[in-house]
Amino acid sequence: MFEENYYVWKKKSVDKFNAIHIIINNYHDLKNINPETYHQILSIEDVNVKNLKTLPAEICQMLNLKSLTVRKAQLENLPKEIGQLKSLETLVLSGNRLTRLPAEIGQLKSLKSLNLNGNRLTSLPAEICQMLNLKSLTVQKAQLENLSKEIGQLKSLETLDLSRNRLTSLPAEIGQLKSLEWLDLSGNKLTSLPAEIGQLKSLKSLNLGGNRLTSLPAEIGQLKSLESLYLGRNRLTSLPAEIGQLKSLESLNLGRNRLTSLPTEIGQLESLEDLALQDTGIENLPKEICQLKSLSELHLDGNRLTSLPAEIGQLSKLKYLSVAANQLETLPKEIRKLKSLKALDLSENYELTSLPAEIGQLSNLQDLNMESISNLGNGSTLEPGKIKVPASLKKFLTRRIGRYPEEFEFIPEKVINPKTNRYISVGKSTYSKLVDEGLIWEPV
Image 1 (cartoon, helix red, strand yellow):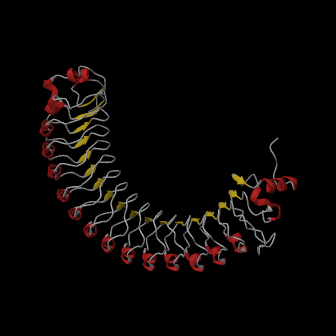
Image 2 (cartoon, one colour):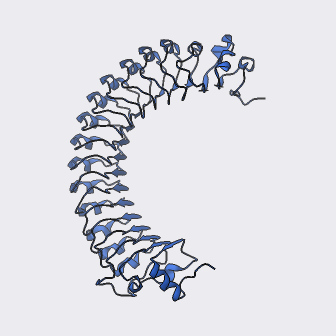
Image 3 (cartoon, rainbow, N blue to C red):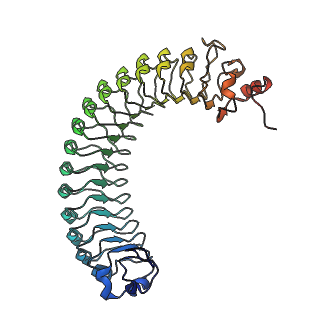
């Protein structure tokens, strides 16, 4: 009649069904559970009861309970009896009003996953670190102001998410989390990292975005397993040379910092596929970046670049290149070598007065954004009809090119072929010229 080991919610006399997985939609449901069946209940999927204030005592008597979820019930405290749930493996208390946790929570020795997101906790009790089987600890968007040194005792911890809190520092003991693979500390107030961060040998993902970091410890280079490093929206002015030692790194985001230059060692990141450097203030792109043979995405928007190195043509796997809102005056002819390139954003480079004819050799280019390049075609070296836009192009943005768009004549018929193009944006006068010449058709 019912699926194996699963029973339906909204049943008042759940004991008659030998229920082991239930959902409680109101307090009346909880009161109708026969106490003699408490030992049969292994999972409470959701206690969907508003204004609960505290966890019902009945739940703390379900000694074989393995999973408990109480979300958005306006819980303000947990009874010390919570420690009786010795079999509990998953505890979700997100979206409540908890300001503290009882010390007895440390008695949950079987707990593997603890979710405390969206509460009002300013700290975690030291006893939480007695949960030696804990693999996932998530305390997003609370009000944590500090992290106790006992955190280092969680030797089984694989995921630690403390994002969007008020942390200003980390204890050195965080380096003792030898099993940690995923660490999210974004949206805090960290100004520095302890050198011990380099001891996290299993770490694969580190998110430090939206903090107040001004520098990184040299020990960051010891994270040999690290695959993703997010440092966006900080106050970094430089990077340690040791960052080049991150041989497993695939994604690096440095956007919205205060960098004016990059260490040459960045070219040693042999596994890097995605590099974000938007809004950092860099004035020169080191040619060593062009040694990143695995790179497929390069974001350079909103900087002060006046040129790109000729070596950029060495990025044979590059699929996306954005240099929007820089101060580029021209592009190197070697750009033609980017045979994998599918998207190129040149928009808002107001100093750009010429384009190399070689841009037409980008045989896989599908998306070309040249919006708001106000000087292109005005006294430039551009020869009308010389540039051939690749037939692969599907999206072409040319709004506000030059003072006299009608003189910008390199738009071939293939670019506006309705059979191949999915999206075309051109300035008003350019549009009129194309209509007059019968190259595009106004809707009837």
